[in-house]
Structure formats: structure tokens, C-alpha cells
Image 1 (tube, rainbow, N blue to C red):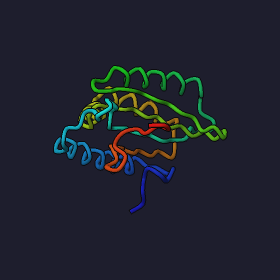
Image 2: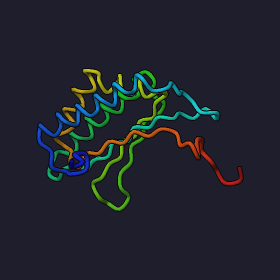
Image 3: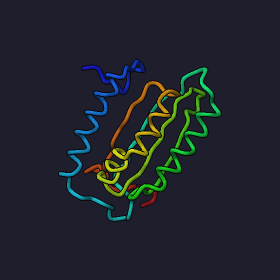
Length: 148
């Protein structure tokens, strides 16, 4: 099966399948062990959304929507941090990362009517969508820094 988050060619059926898969992940989140913070107090769940901005779209309108999405994410229960990055090589790629105390916090936010409506407004500006859900590594479970 083709990875729909990486193709750049999406139909409404594709997004229906993506929502179905996300629903399965969210359902599984209820059965995962509750891990809130690591020994050093660092959050363990990161949701990384990657996408490209479609050429020819109103960049000012996109920027306004993006600011509203960031504000919405910052108000969500369980969110620890929100980060946004652009590709430094000039490509129209964006990485939007939210850091959560627990996977179930993100799952609840992701299912909310407000988030679904905001995301529906954003998708006409985007292509090549990809979602990654990251947890702690069993080998390097907390950040390491030089000299430690």
C-alpha cells in the first residue's frame, strides 16, 4: 500500500483513509502505558507534521491560519511545546512539531471539532503531508549533551 502521507497527490478518499488510520492510532493510545515525563523532566511524545506550501496560494492568508493553529495548539491540555521550522535551503517545506505530556493528550486534541475545522482550513494550502509520532528511545531515553 502506498504511503499516503508522502505522495503529494491526495484525494478526499485518501484523507478518509488517513483519518481511519489515525483513529486506529488514537484508539491504541488508550491502551498504551502512561508515560508522562522522563527522569530529567523532558516530555516524551512528539508529533511531527511535515508538509509543503502549495505555490500560488495566498501566503498572507496561510500565515494568519498558521498563527491561529499555533495559538490553538498552545491552549490544548497536555501540550508542552510547539515548534515550527522552515527548510533552510529555500524549499517550501514546513515541519510543525508539538510536544505532549502523553499520547492520549494529543489524541484527544486531534479528535476535537475545533482542530478538525482548523485543519480543514489549512489543507488547501498544503501538499506532501506526512505525520510522525515519536516516543522515547529505549537506548537513549533522555537528551545527552557534550560533557555529561
